[in-house]
Image (cartoon, rainbow, N blue to C red; front, side, top):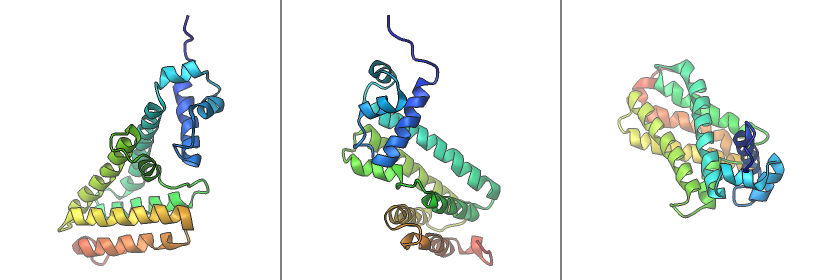
Length: 199
């Protein structure tokens, strides 16, 4: 008779995988490491996740949901002020880079590890980043940007630079310029929303 997974097995696997993938990179982690970290048997692991690719995709989907919950928490206090909400999100990115266990953005990291557009990990990473770009575009439109797409794309470059430089050169390197740069971008694209305002 097949063993029934104990309650919380899937959760334990995802939590252990998140730690391993975040610290070592996705490709570097084998399924045996996940088994060792969780203490579950191989059959139980593969019952929950039929393949490593499936595990990677599930981890990124869950991470995406958690990320948007955090983003909502930091932007909600500024509801009705989309320009300030954008800056609140930028501050959230800056704070994440300052965390001692920051190893880069899991979405950019995963997409760079898997170049095949059809890979489930790359697809989930792309969905997250497109979602972020769409949010920035929508907030920009609400803030009165003449070209919300240009605003979103420029801010995506700032965010990507912040995360990449923060991981390699530290938060006191080029990453320290991210907030000031984002503010300049907002003032350029949304001058009426920010006229006389201190972000």
